[in-house]
Amino acid sequence: MTSEDVVRRYAAMPVPRYTSYPTAMEFTPAVGPAEHSLWLRRLDPRESVSIYLHVPYCRALCHYCGCHTKLAVRDEVIRAYGRALEEEIALVGEMLPARIPTARVAWGGGTPSILGRVGLASALRVLERHVELKPGSEHSIELDPRNVDLELTRFLADQGINRVSLGVQDLDPRVQEAIGRIQPASIVEHAVDLLRVAGINRINFDLIYGLPHQTVETIRATCAAVAQMNPQRIAFFGYAHLPGRRANQKRIDASALPDAVQRFDQARAIAEFFEDRGFIPIGIDHFAAPDDGLALAAREGRLHRNFQGYTDDDRPILIGFGASAVSRLPDGFVQNVADNPSYCRKVASHTLATMRGWRFDEADRARAQIIEELMCNFRVDLGAVDPQHDYADELALLRPLAADGMLELKGGTIRMTRTGRSIVRVVAAVFDRYRTQEEKRFSPAI
Image (tube, rainbow, N blue to C red):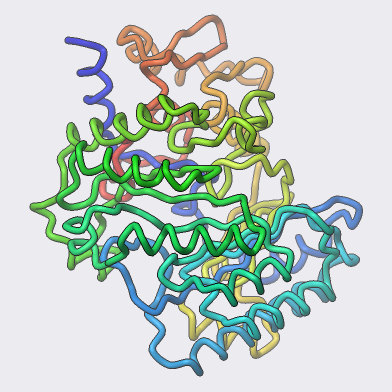
């Protein structure tokens, strides 16, 4: 059996993406608004934080989408959500010990620009009353290329937004029809041009593999078109087909989806394409231009992983706003209710919208660091991270992977081989003390 055959075998294993540890699947309603409020009040006002604002609405809902996103039909629904977002910001702001400095601000969705220029500007004014937005710090937003015009890009630049992530996914017409997202390359090119005219040059593209009717050839064509637009970063994710959890995914023809071997070949084709063109590989699913901050962080061992994926953001505290948003505080995770109307009602009653969360213990902190180092650096020294624990059981589980050439074990040090890096999630899962074998909860490793 070749090393490629071995990787393909592991690639079909269902494991978490590990954008957090413990994963959100473990969050419990035992952590609620009381804990959230207490943890906010305990924050050190001298320590800067990152901010995430979630806007879970789109004008059209793509078939593949696995996010907490709803179709917006009426403008009043959007305005009501914008008011609720501002009310939550004010409510949380009252609980903060001071006007805390911020290192990063990120808008995610959905389509955050659906709030309109008035709504976005209003939310930012409220935010600035409660936290200190440092001039020149990274301020990013996710955009749908189909909804980008010159007025929007100039407005975003005026508001200090200096990085944009564009949802490209795939540029093949047949694939686009199958996923309900008609978006020719010309639309993406036009959006990129408008952003650069407005002075926003830090542009990320999101791609997806494992979609219906995708082949290695169509993916290479998409990659070639994307490379012509000179993005700073590429993130490519494997499509997770979970129609039992996402009703919109029932519109995907499961018989047209690539199998595990084809998914592996597609992921490899994307990685090979961008690496051959000088992009720096970042973890398992990102690429960055050599002069981008993410590439520099990877070279210097400063890479991190959070709910937005790989990042050079080193802030351990993330305050999330909006329906389903997650905050990471020193004491643990908290997550808002995901249902948009319930979220709006909660904050309108001057109550935190916290639905569930997780209180950290020392074992969680150690295992979180182990998993993050594996995911970011492909190596970890267990003795350096947690000298009080020998992890003998975990190391025993890893020996078959070492025999297969996926990793090297030397004492308590684990180092992924070049061949094994793509299945690092499988190795990370060995250190997840909450993981079950309920296979349908997670996507394949590749």
